[in-house]
Length: 437
Image (cartoon, rainbow, N blue to C red; front, top):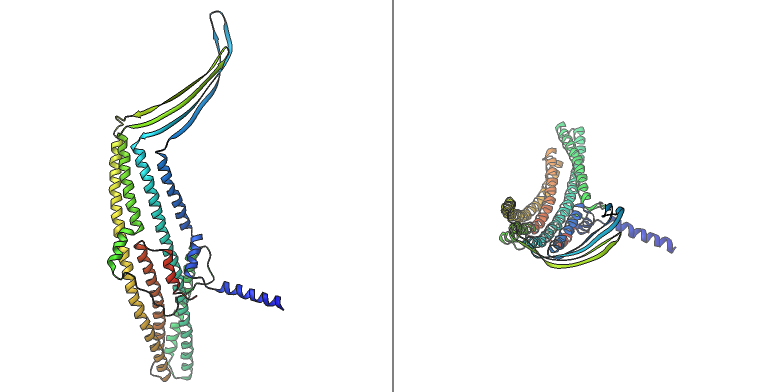
């Protein structure tokens, strides 16, 4: 008796686990592991972090070893004796160390390497925020499509009932054929809308699948009557200021300006002398018929080079780098303006969305009352069929608009934090708490 009972309990537990809807945090963690775009950003970060090591290498010594081994065959003649097939061997091995003492271009390259690594980190942080936004948008797009389909199917059921009622009343002679035709037209329209809603849901689910790799059986919806928090601080100016200074796109643009400045110095270094410490050790061997020996030589000193004329190439490169620095400064200003505009739009979107949600909640209550009144009036003969159909359509349209307004308000809140450079994974927790688990 115990084994069958244990099997039933295990099966029930597995069924409950599989049947549980995935929430927003779970979907986000799945995206962290499977999203190809984010994986590409992670690899780009690893590559960018190597710029610091590569820049530092320009300042460190280089050690190299080189050499050769040769076998020589030849003929020769002395005063009285001719030599044929004379063979000799010679070889050389050299180890050389070079340490830059003054190379301004290398120093600027080192600074550029550090700045490039920081820019790669800023780009990755921006991609982390983008992943949060993409996951949340895809998640709520699926919920929106589900709500639309549910409302359309409910409207179809109500319209079907109304069509049947109109046909019965026509048969008994209490209504005209016009009521039946109106109900039939409404039914045909809602059937077409149902097909469109089903297609839209499949498209939205496919978009989510592209991010997370595999779709859960269902997604946790918003709880009924949730209250969406307003942004804090409640004024626009702090958000705009934060966006202009802390937005990761702005941070990356600032670093690009600094990299462009260093590039100017790097190109101007083409006019400057270079100085290196050089040390080498050479070992030469030679063997042959009647002679041979080994020579060793060690040397240490400095090597310098003074550029005099190179066909105006350095001057041209300096002008090019100055123009690119000006471009980087304009890109920075454009990034600041874009971040500020995004913050303004998101802030206004949150506040208008909150007001819209409140108005649509009141409209939903009114639409339900209107529908009940029209149904009652239809039954007693003071309302016609089209009045009931219009009331039904109004209610379901209001419900769809209300759910979308809630999702849009939540998304604008996330976009506002992203614009200010403050969006983190932890910001999904309060939203997750609004879901029905």
